[in-house]
Amino acid sequence: MSAKSASLKEFLTLPAQVTYDKEHIMRNIPHRDPFLLVDEVRELEPNRKYVGIRHVRADEYYFKGHFPGRPVMPGVLVIESMSQAFGGAIMNRTVGENRGIPLFLSIEEAKFRGMVQPGDTLEMPIEVLRLGKIAKIYAEAYVNGKLCAQATLNFILGETSHV
Image (cartoon, rainbow, N blue to C red):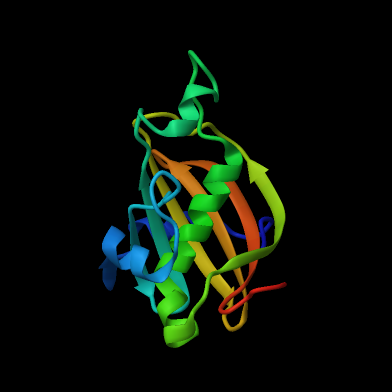
């Protein structure tokens, strides 16, 4: 699937097999506040389908400067939220105890279609296209059922002192 293919919006209505909370996510990725940008991940189908959730708070650090008087979550942080949701769900399965960190290799066909503002709940359906040391996902981001962003993301997973 790519950004030009069918929508993942249907993932938002599918039942979760497992829901991962912030503690589980933090065991799988090294991100911490104020840069932990995912609150939970719903696993719909192991290693294939997920939905990340981010409750966007008014006190987020980036709203002070983006933009005063009209706060908007930066699009690059929406993409980062998608990435963290993926890593938070799967990193313990892909490379075991020596998991290292997931690092971006590329971001393809990113499109930004709507604003994410304080008080919004960002829902991020994710489809895993390839899973291994090199991983590829297609993800979208929704607020109140409206598409806000979409992208295909490529990662290297595991011990990666130099890429």
